Length: 293
Image (tube, rainbow, N blue to C red; front, side, top):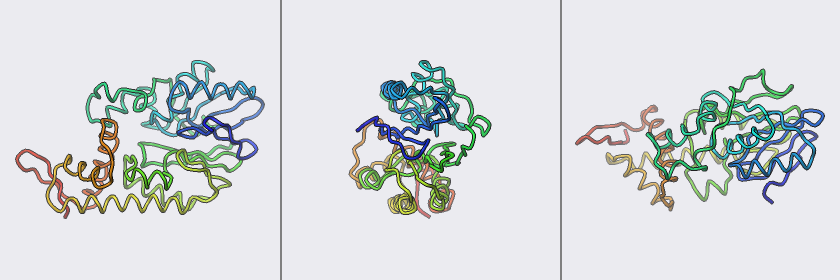
């Protein structure tokens, strides 16, 4: 059931939604959220849950600035006056959401990219620091999926992992999931494999007590895609030809949204493969071509 409130420990909960929303009771009637869902409707449903329980929202802690995690910010802030905190570069994206489709496209985004799935409404976020956390909370840096993404550990040892893990079903179905920095992402997954907690709550996978195997599954998928790209680059190829081959081989369907999400990810893979000396670039007939070393 969507937007069902699920209690996992004395103080920690999550709201079942397309990107799980964390909710933690802070004392008295005060609660904070970890992320806010994908749009105003999500915000409205969260507000109904808050009202039904007589809770007062004091703050939203955004893990990162993807639209499906900050989409409820503006509505909830306007309704409750809560503070909003977001980490590092993601704070700028949360304050100025046009940065997201602009970054993904690599220029000014056309109308097909300026919609709520890639561009949330602006919200008045402040930079996340240790000082603005509830007592006993810890920030867990999780770079890789997006610029300065973080997770949180609560006082009752529940860890909210944001988007650093995709479910097996998602990986098997879509194969290529969004990654900004491949090297950082692999380091994050290795770190996550060693974490201990009472419960882990990834935004896009089931809550579970041990994420070691799932983290390894995500690592293996990244390495598989890197090998696949390297194989495709036996001949010197331009980016568009590499992208087309990946879409075809993995049975994906291209539209504007998938073009920028998968395209941005593949550019990040190519940058990582170049930095680790597995592919080279050459310029031929005024075209940038990629070729494996």
